[in-house]
Image (tube, rainbow, N blue to C red):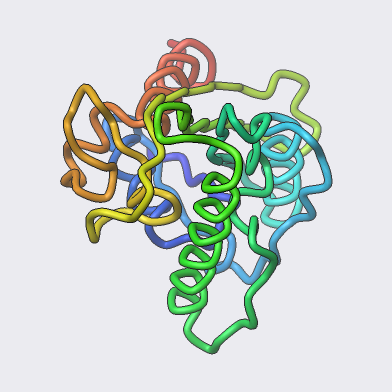
Length: 214
């Protein structure tokens, strides 16, 4: 039997990525937006606290198990910023009717602010950064044992974007071991090694040990 899980996100690309990464398990992801569930508040200073808050919110509103992903970019020269405010680092852009169009404009504004700040603070040799993905899954809002998985993907922030794939800061994050930015990778390449792939691998192991244990 397939277990329906609400993804506490309205990001279509994130839904697609996580659905592909969890394809081995008997689960089906549906976005909270498709169920008419509004986004949760994210008032916390850490990824894990925000992910837990979002998972509980989606589970309470839907009456189903829920999965939340709180991800972002941390840059050493900026003291870990953008961190938990990665998605709106430049401040929220005016919304459009097309959600994805708004997201693209938001991404561009965030990237522009990041580059502007780094140009003032850090030379090219000191632009190390890393993507963080924290996944939290709950069976119900009061689940005493939320499953928590964390992935970390280090790289280097370029002075200008490269590549047309991915989203967010992908065009700026260069992965030395691969010789490409994240935006230049295919979906299959990204799904094999990304911070989200690492976190999902951990989560799948936890799900097998707990929710799907026989």
